Length: 170
Image (cartoon, rainbow, N blue to C red):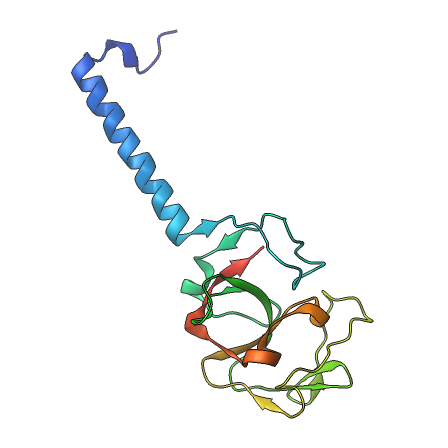
């Protein structure tokens, strides 16, 4: 059986050109994937434990939120304008909802938030923004870390703008 394509029968100059074109396209596709589709960063810190552990490699999908808005329960990567690094948190309240931390629980629109991704006994300690009902602005999201006792999140800096959310983490 004869192969359909024999690379060695192509003249040297054409073979070199073909290899250069293939190399260019490989770099271009790799660059597009890395900058517009997905990344694989290493998790730093414990704010999302036990869901994401320090040192674990996560998959950061950049594409989904170009097609849809974040949903409650999504784990998102956020680039805060005043921070150099990216933080990872979970969306607990959507635009125009009210949030309150009361009795170590999260209350959204006057209803206790069901959080099946947390242990039933995981408390949510209050932060500076927790003592009262917080109204999430239009185009903003209230985010919390799963390790509530050790998370710098919306209890401290308020809701995050939609433009700050760069992707979803898996």
